[in-house]
Length: 357
Image (tube, rainbow, N blue to C red; front, side, top):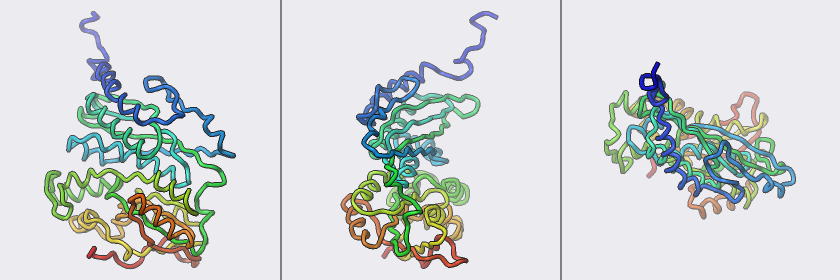
């Protein structure tokens, strides 16, 4: 077979030159998402982080987390907006790390595309780098993979992994929680990056709404609301833990508030959360109304306006709320921890949400 008629990587749909251009375009953003401990830059086979920085810890525990953005990437693709989805990715990863009290140190990303569009890939990495800056961690490397034949030319997905560190005696979690502790709810920025399969089914398949539809309740288009980036809480949570006593955090992702909070409640205790202490943003009620979605289904799928929870002793409440307010983070007392009756769930949601008036 001659060289002119033989198979090639390019003929199979993989454009190496486009991949190289994407790397060139993203370098500027990756440089901005760094820390003093990072050694070298992107382009090597592995990212390097100077672990000697951990010598200041008596017993450092490394924490690791990985996640993606889910079907929210479909909204970004359809809107042609690629520089915010990275915020979602970082938030999903680093806010899992900080739950145990760990400071996020670095992240790596994985971007899978049907066809490499260099500017598009660079925009995705820009968003990831910006998210890392907001989280106080470094973006030390990643991978862009082109999968022609498996993904359509405009399709893509993103995933990431992060590493953090926490002093062993500063580890947060269920074993610290006591009866009498207070549940502080921290406001979400919207849907974050969970439940989009339900949201898309309701708004697109059932209601037939378009992304460019202006929605008065949102004060913007449907697409703009759905693409609102996930709030990144890591620095806020670390500031809280440094300033006052915190017993546990819970990152409210897939499964909703009750199920995620239950993950840090010990077997002998019970958390009661009062819905009347907050009013969810309009998007949550709209999904329920247009889809005829029962409240229990909404609450086990969406965050319903609470993106992170802090469990603190009663004497820490005022300081905790003040610290968060100083950081422009809306938070409120939402519940309490008490001894659990034999047949009680770990977490119970009671009452009804207000009307926002």
